[in-house]
Length: 554
Image (cartoon, rainbow, N blue to C red):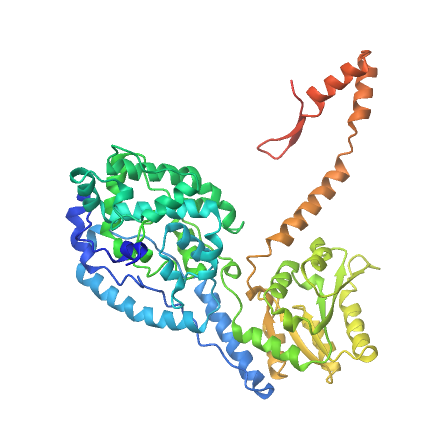
């Protein structure tokens, strides 16, 4: 049997931590180790497009699914559990019900859903979930992420330390007996401890095996090494994710003391069947099924555990496959497609997410993107061309009257020009403005697909589009977790623009003015020494109220 399998299949009775014997009865109800309970999400079955005549019904189903997803966002998360009132019979019923849900969840994972698994796969790898779980196509953790992380020294070290900590927690009694009576150490008990983790750590420059060390001291040492090194893995997670919440999962409470280690063992063995794949983590386990089922569920629970509600669902889920297929069908049926954007009534970051989320083989059918922009729109529109391979034409519409934008009329004229002069037969209009219905209805020979946003698009235009069998979708449903690049670039660009407009400082001129005012005469050598010691190291100091001062060396 593979050492990782040993970590999962070892029975609780044989490996009970001596400080957790009083609660061992709870372990007899442990769930299947292959699936500790995958969560069933309230997702309806994906719709299929049969032909263009059924587009009206497809749009109704997409709208219904969207409303359902929006409703799910408002579900409150309660991660607490009262151990004193826990009932064994109720636990058995819940475990049986969860097993039934596992079968449904496995089918969803096999057939595909719109939830993502990047964060949960990364967390699972670092926590030491066995590789065979990643290799099982019915389980949430993804093998490609495992293989990528396994090349990263930072991630490998944390994974091996967590695997060793979990092994010691599970097999504490047997390991302790081997060390006390057979004079063995961790690296000589392969049937209880994954010695390949010890070997891998040595290769990565971390030595954990010590002589004459009590087993509790080993756990403390693991905790210390994990605490010291877990921040090295911060860059493995998206920038939008609260790192302190992730870090907390790996830190054993009061784990630098023997009392803290004993308390952690009690909590772990009391709720072992509720931990994902029964690996140790700092989690107040509740009956939430497999918390690593997908990014959406995990991050919602994680934020709820810290008293915060996670609402940006587009960062943890993607638009439905049926929506993408409808876009692909539209593009495939077209001869020449132009994507036109009303920059006043659209979001550059959401459009960037939409383009990133679509297959390039179909996007190649789009001959160009035309941005009809206004001087008061987001400056990020000027950066979109750097984040797509589609040619982008950026048109800034100057205002004649400051209170009247010309974007809508220029966009309308531009679409007509593309249709009649350049033989463009299909248009994707990115705007939530209902005024463009006049344009759409006036060119019945052209094909249109409309991309809108939830909060900006009213029910009347959506109803009209459905009545005319014109497909529309929401750009804020596409996965947006990888759009921080354009966001950061836009912010840096504006910060530099602000600084340049307010700070004009030439240090050479500054020093000449200082010499003249002070009437000090210095040789060139003295001037250079002064400059290197006091001027070159100067830096900005940012106060708590946001004010900035320039600090010189003293």
